[in-house]
Every structure is written in structure tokens, then in C-alpha cells.
Image 1 (cartoon, rainbow, N blue to C red):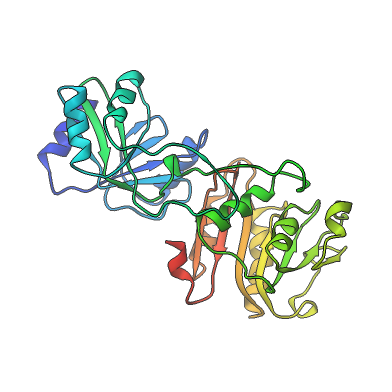
Image 2 (image 1 turned 135 degrees about the vertical axis):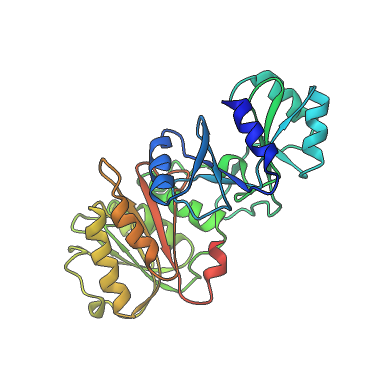
Length: 324
């Protein structure tokens, strides 16, 4: 299989190949999405799918490898030379020959996995990637779409203040993607109980209309700049809240139900920006997923802390470049 793939790549040097790396345990979701999008899968190597063509916006790709090459190498030193000629720093995705791969990584500039504080600056330089197919073949990408290894961010978590670990989703959105509501902005957090997202929004100085039929955690409810409404998010009308800078939702509901909800708020023209978790049952609802993607100004990503769910972001005109 490998030799056939190498021959195919070497026989058509103008052909473009892209690598899509799935989140852990979501290989089947990525494979299905690629197939539905009409992307030709050349080969699969663990979580890494090598595909024909330029990179496309694929939701279940935790990271995307660009300008992929498959090269022959004769030694650890030779492999390191090939890598250094193509990129400034690297991550190693281990398929096999793990020790050999780590020895190669020691000979090139590498990026170390570290834990970040909330809103800490993220490296802006591109990150290369490689994986060994065997003792003589190597997959190389000179740049990937995420500046962090494997498209994942790890935090120094707050184990005291937030009432649940759901807060990490917003920490990742705000830290890794470099945007957030500004202090004083008016936001709404629907399906907010026990209050993890409300806590994050309040902590950065936003005013939060927090909505849920169940009460907030008492230690969150007493914080300033929180207006709690104990009612159903699906019964609340935009006109009852007024103009909002941001609409947030980590509500547990079927994807089509969430789509109805956000379309109502979007069509009201009372909300500028959205960030919502789309939660799936089995199997993944790709039909609704693609409907979310078709909404102008939208992007959907699988965050490091997402499980069988993804995060839909919809920004007003002028902020689109922050989604790249």
C-alpha cells in the first residue's frame, strides 16, 4: 500500500495532497464527512487521512496538514535534513517506529506541548508535521493550520471556581482563536445551568443574561454582571431581551432544534455574533451540520474539549478574518 502511494505521489509531482487529522476516537466521523464532501481519500494512517486536492474546511479535522509529501529517507540524519529544508519547527505524529521518529525530532527544531493560561498568547508561526510510514518512508507537511501540536490546546485548569468543566470550551475559543466579547458587551448564555459559560463571560467583564429552567450554581448566581432568567431558552423571544453583542449556547438539545433557535435569533437582527455547541446523538447528524455551515459568516470546529459535539461560530461582517 505504501509503495503504491509513494509511486503515485512521485509520478505526478503537480498533484496536491492534504492530510486531515481527526480528534481521538473520531476517525469514523472524519471519514464519513470527507466522503460526503466528495474528498478522495488516498490512504488512512491511524487518525491521519491523506487526501487528494487542496485543503478544505473540514469540521472533524482537529488539524490539517498542507502541501503533504511522501519521501524516501536513508537515515535519521537524512530525514532531519529533509525536514529542515521544508519548515522551521516540527511536531511528530507517531504511527510506528516511534523511537526512530523521536530521534529524528531531536535533530530538528521542535515544538513542545505545554499548558497555557486563559488568554495567554499562542505562537503565531506555522508548524510543520511529520510521520514515519516505515524505516525508509516519511510523510512531511511543511505547515499545518494550527500553531499547536495536533491542533490541541491544554490549559492550566481552574479547579476551584467554575461549576463544571464546560468552561474549557470558551477558554479554547477565546484563547486559541484570539477573539472574545469585550468588557461591557451584552451577551446571552442559554441553557446556562450550572453556569460554567456564564462564569467565563462574567470573568472577562461582559454583562450576561443567563437563561435556564434550572437554577445557577449559588456561587455563580451571586457574581456581578449576571442577570439570571429562570425560564426555557426555547420560549424566550429576542424582543424580550433586546440588542445583543453575543449569543452563546451550550444547551443540550437535538441539532435541528438548536438550528431553529439560532435562526430565530439571527433573523431578528438583534444579535451580532454567535458561538454555540452542536451536540450529536448517534449517528452524527451531518444533514443539520451542513445546514449550519451554509449560514453566511459561519465556521464549525471540533474543539480539543468537545466530545461528540462541535462548535458553531457565526460572526458579523468585519470579523470573518479571525476565523481563518
